[in-house]
Length: 408
Ligand SMILES: *Cc1c(COP(=O)(O)O)cnc(C)c1O
Image 1 (cartoon, helix red, strand yellow):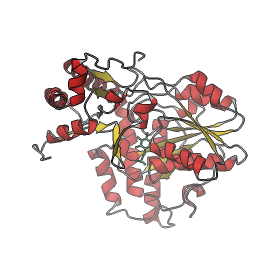
Image 2 (cartoon, rainbow, N blue to C red; image 1 turned 60 degrees about the vertical axis):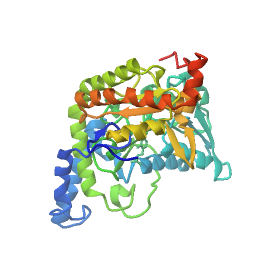
Image 3 (tube, rainbow, N blue to C red; image 1 turned 30 degrees about the vertical axis):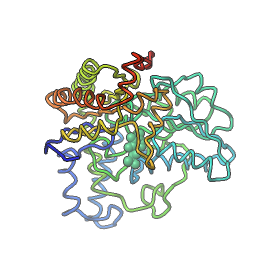
Image 4 (spheres, rainbow, N blue to C red; image 1 turned 45 degrees about the vertical axis):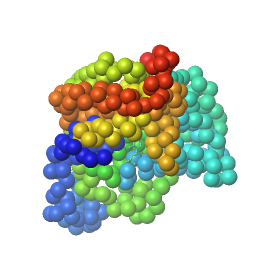
């Protein structure tokens, strides 16, 4: 499909974000002038080490923890793997893992791998979610047993933005002596976090979801939590993760966390207002559109809407012609158009799950950009429906789906 505009309207911030200009500026000298190894004995390296320590402090400030509870990894995925693999190695006699059906593949696929490839050594409970993407805490409590080595539950869902009650869930795990990990990749920078007041043992975050570069992650390990390294090597990170630190990215992440803390209010007011304007505008202008996910227990930047009887992939291609970047809940995996595991877990009807479209905003979006999407998307959907035999059929029978989640 030919691109008809040079304009880029970026509304896919849950996939990755722009590196903030302030972050880039902070990083650049560490590629050129200050290229020392932070572990070196000489001052040329030592000054870099001090800058890394400063960044660690800024990240700890955003999370409400102590800097020495943080270790740097290569990405959110590595942080997730490190936490889960550490826990199951620390408690080899406990063979049960509790997670949810809506986790990011970084957690979901690892848990499934542990269940299938190690001769069924581990049993994994993937908790279901309600139709609005929220979790039933009774079902959660019932899943926790003496056999459970670790609970791994995401703080906020990347597809819907739905937020889980992590503080409560961590406390319930702790009462039973179970380690608790949260993949907070989507939450950090968007919702307030104070780890010192919580019973969380492990927390994962990723730089590129909060305006730092790709290729840098952090794992929080609560002081006193048993820990077994994932990457074995040198003495970096107090022996908790071998490998020379990704210095520039760490410094960038420190700056990004400082900015995120300072801009948290803007995220929760201006960005949320933009998101609501987009969401309400689309749902009002496009018949048979349904919100996926709880209306309020949700990240301020994310909206996921299903447009019944159209394919998400088709919507994205047409949006792309206008330079609008969004994302779809139907992942084109191995050639088959399957609705995402998140949409399936929520029980979004087939006719709607395929048309689910995610817009994830950031502080760099403007009201004018929202109006631009509102000006183009209703016509795109109408045109696609005009070509859809399913739509024609549904309109004839007056069926529609009308079966969206009534909970949220
Ligand atoms: C992006 C993302 C990850 C993976 O982070 P990477 O740094 O890309 O490995 C994990 N969990 C969630 C919820 C995410 O959105």
